[in-house]
Length: 432
Image (tube, rainbow, N blue to C red; front, side, top):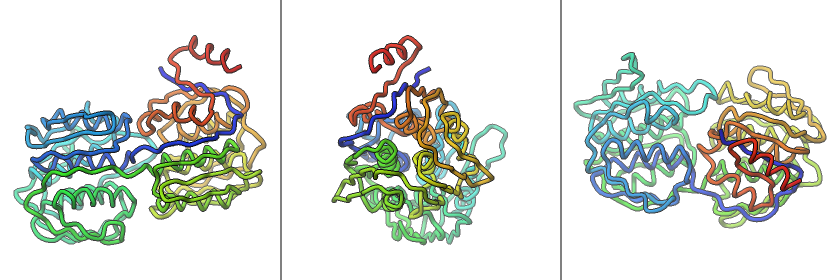
């Protein structure tokens, strides 16, 4: 099994280019199958989640042309099946976007229940509630692990989400774009990738208004057409490198970003003593002389993102004083804490709250990534720890970070992806 081997203790310095947003790209790829014309999506991140979804789209008959690692052309005219099997989707949460896309276009969809990281309960009841409000019959209790949705016709309706779910918001936008009449969805998610999917759909001929606010209005159209669209930069990848600068005492220019998307992360790093300089499409994070403690609570956008909680808590593990981190989105998001404590951190979790007593330094150890963002956090821990750290189960990290180790090496990190003990030993001998 591949793993990262890291020698910590070096401040990271230099420039890093941020890839396209994985969470936006997943919704965009699903939207691309909703027309019988060609849709070109650019700035795709080359990560396993994206590649698996593209494979699934090809497997239902769509014509897929990978122009290069970051560009794909999709034509849904040749789709011959509305069934997306479990083997294709068991490792990826965003399989459910194909449900909304296929239901909207063909009035018929059968998609395997989603997989992905085990960070807590992520029910799809709001998706089902919305599909039914639009006139679909939904079967999620067939005993085959499949979600089946069918409709004779889809008609716009008023939908109030019980929680601001990103997945449900995107899925219902997809379906309602081709429903008859007007759909109003209230208490929607406002994340940047929701806006990105709405912008793509509008460029395909949809009529969606209000994305990024509390209420989205969708005026159904008869059909969508082809377009070319570029994925927004990845807010979470950018935040991860921002935290890496703070953790290692370094200075990193994070390029190809939308600074307003990073404000919640920027404000916390400034509170912790960092200097953050914003440019038109970049931010520079320079670590302060010391990391000071703070308190944070994860919230839907524009609040502090749950996907940045493990990385920020890792930085706070070496802050002066006492920090408190409250996780309000997912109940199992602290599974990485035991691994950090093995490296010398002093973190106690009680329910949804982590109490962090900052230590002077972490010590290298062998740790295991329990999920995508926690895996990135453990890499950050290894970068600032004394000695060598081995991070196992990096398949999680590869779901959402393109060439993570290569980008870190470009900033001066001693990190390598290895597949066996012999390669690990060679790395240790080389870097000392």
